[in-house]
Image (cartoon, rainbow, N blue to C red; front, side, top):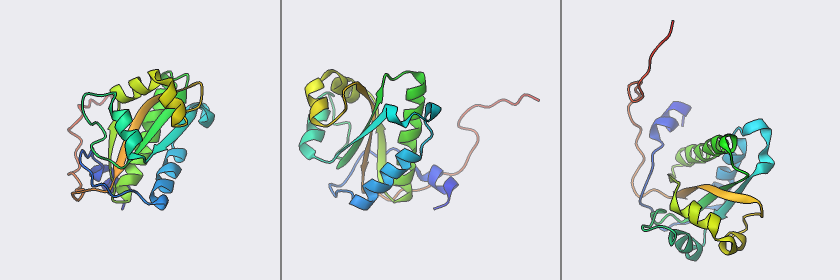
Length: 167
């Protein structure tokens, strides 16, 4: 898929069949995450946790009133050491790289921020259980899975975000 088509096809998906990702698909997602630019090249300040256990995903969803992972069979949690503005910006790049490669692979994804990462940050026992290193705070997560519906590219536009030009 060409880059612009991937960008226009990438979308938040909120329904997944239970089919698990292959090991090769997970490896490509992780390669995409590791290809993301991070502030000052400090990759050691980030950690990825790949959760494929339905029981753990259900436990994570218990921090929310809803089921924010929408039945996705794989969740990737991005944690950072002392997350400030630079780390949060870097996490955006890490997550978007994974979402874009998921689209390229024909997979569905949805960025998840909110109750789950906040709840997990407070639950040290669960954080330890799933392998988040001491000193790292879970900040963002990505739900990933097969797609129940084909992903379709939107029409390109420059009108969604207001723009002004300064000559």
